[in-house]
Image 1 (cartoon, rainbow, N blue to C red):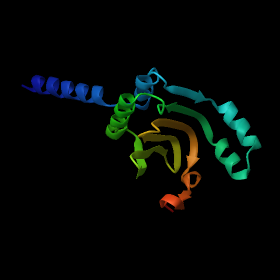
Image 2 (image 1 turned 60 degrees about the horizontal axis):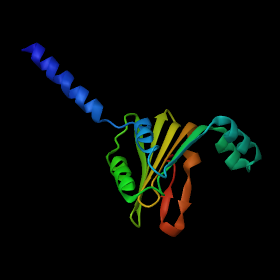
Image 3 (image 1 turned 180 degrees about the vertical axis):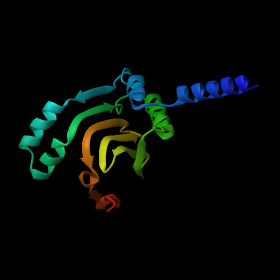
Image 4 (image 1 turned 90 degrees about the horizontal axis):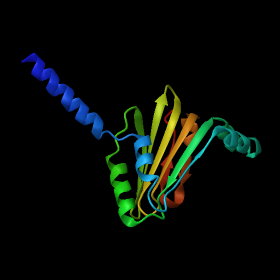
Length: 160
């Protein structure tokens, strides 16, 4: 009897894990779609940009190791709808939801993979007409994410 229970639990866990979506899985699934643009910016160009940017932007750039962007805005509507469904269902282990904004049929979601007070990985998913996925790896602080968009009444402030 115990053996059957263990096998059943193992099968359920295996099925559950196969249903889990990873960031890399979403990039792999959609990067080959027609009109999809996917690119990665490694640390060296980011650090060079930081040298020539103003103080605040330069400091933030110095804490970024890589940026990966996938733009699906020119893809057919069915691809964008499939992407939106994936982003809606996304439950990432180790990531904390930071922001959700809805505006004119688009939805922006932001997750962070935290290590202490640092954001090791920032994930931004945009669904709708501007379907985009951005992953930023580095050592960001919540202060780096402070922004305000008074036009749309959107505010993100670090909790102190």
